[in-house]
Image (cartoon, rainbow, N blue to C red; front, side, top):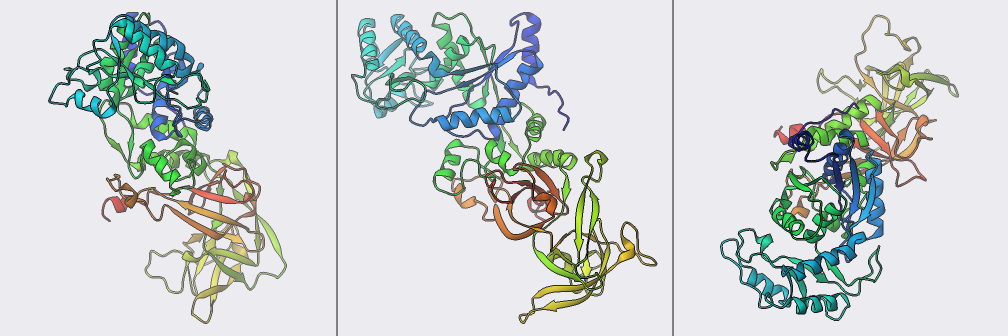
Length: 552
């Protein structure tokens, strides 16, 4: 899939900064918190930050915002690294906010010495009361006017572990009457004792808050443009205040863009964690999840996700993106790149009575009808076949039905024309087998004196390989998740078929390899079941939700 260089307001700002000499080299960063797996929304930020660095011959760091060890884990760190690599990007520097803990502590001491920070002993409920509301100013903490010496002593003792969790915090001294709630003496440090940090062990019981850590980390790394989503717009004055009031030379420019809201799924890390913890999905890489790991296991390509992120663009206006946009990107990619194969998901046995018993032959089929360079494959053909049950009706319901009917003919894909001569049923009247005949003069050519319009897929019963098929669909049955979003979970988001057959060329395919199952959709061999053949549906051949969304 050819990827075009995007244009957006952020790139226009960067162009102006370079032209004016404000910056000499663009430096960005992607700063995830390692408390879960990355999702498609993070992919937007990844492609933006790394893409800008690549296009401007700049640099992009991967930095883990690891200031809350209660929710973080080494497993998430490794998963994030894998996702960034898989999307096609290499970071210029790998950092952790915890790398800067000692320097951050020093800057906090500097703020105390300047009279711009103080140790507060209000509990959480009292702090909320003192904070005020959107329409009423807050009140100064009774501890706000402590002496510098007392604050320095208390802050040191907080670090030394003398106080219980929640008993004291360090707050910035800004303006309790500010119209921006984030500027009403925000908390800079809190006590979290008894935790083992994945990078620093048990050497700290005092951890900095994100709003204090983030601007300083950006400045330490020399970031020129700190790109974040719109919910951090109200935090920008605090970002600037921190950097303006400490002795640090670099002052990055924070620029906000709209976050990705994708229909028919949930993007909240809290909700995704609930799905995993409550067993509503099989894990973070469940193919129904919007996580990068889930999309990768389902069969999405990195190129399709990058293309999707380029298509939706970067703006300052929040909006909801139709799931069809993401599905269209992967369809286009796999239509061009995926080899064709045949799979019968609901097999109906067909016996060709005029084909010699014990005989078999090898037919040839192209791997891709539009790309000769992809070569061809062998198809074993035999007396007994499987076709899909939906491709047969005893009587055609209308003229549009171009498949097999009793007494009618149809062409087998890349093979012969067959005629249904007899229908075999069980005692309950269920169709168990079709007795058919084949026309040996129709391989690669039309039959004499008659026109056969229908073409169906098939698999040799003798040589077909049994597989499990997992039909994945959208996580939610409604476009937008409501308050009771778990009630909106789509009961048909996973349908398992354990009696399907595929052509034998698929027996040795690699986990993660994608194919188009002709007339069925795009499928990928599951990477979570490497010891057996399981295929996940990536996406249908057409947008089957379009009529539903239109009320059709």
